[in-house]
Length: 306
Image (cartoon, rainbow, N blue to C red; front, side):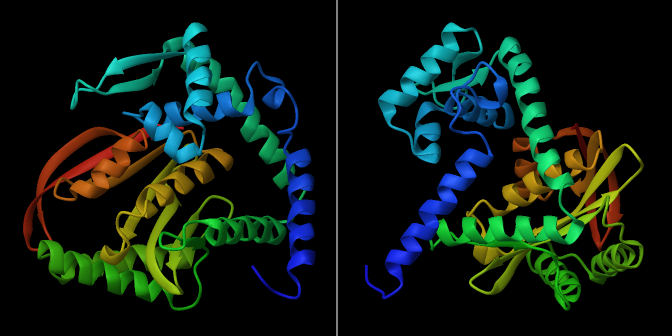
């Protein structure tokens, strides 16, 4: 490393680390006044939000030493919170799952975490909240593997037209849908812009190397229900986890502003999107054949509680 300002930058990063670890309470022996350490809580979080997770998955994604992770998981097993089950796709692999007691222990921990973040955000104005979230996204993007790095941001002028264009092009190329679909997307986007409620609705744009590569919307269905709409990931950016991240952001926002459930409409041919929804905890509610966009399709409604 080189650079005239590097020593000062190092101290600035260290100062921020000291501030932030104290601010979010990770120096305490137990997280959020619970019976769990930070690592234990993170393992419970991963198992509560994903299926088919192995110890190898956790070790790789959390950057933990194998021996340390093994002790953490074993401790949670002894407390009856985690169990192991053979994978249905590979009998040689053991998947980790939360028990009923584990899910019961995670709920108050998750609620406490959400309440703590809510308390922080309530002390800021709406522009300040957005500035904080954008800054965090920028830090995450800069410190991520540069080949996989991307950031999420609010829409800028021109993005809405881009969404309509890319949705229409993608579904015409990959599924042969006609311009009826482009008209539908244009109507959805126009309604969002005209009737946008910043307290209950949101759009995220995924950007990579200065290029827009994804988007998603959360809109109000009713006071208790949020609707996820128009999830899109550019083919050139698939495999980076952008789709799952966009859906996670939708769920997080919906919980934060007080929705109790989320619904979405899709079609059975969109296999990759359905896998993302399943991994995020959505369940198929109903399906019905229809003829739209020049094709015979099967419409599906998916939903989940928040």
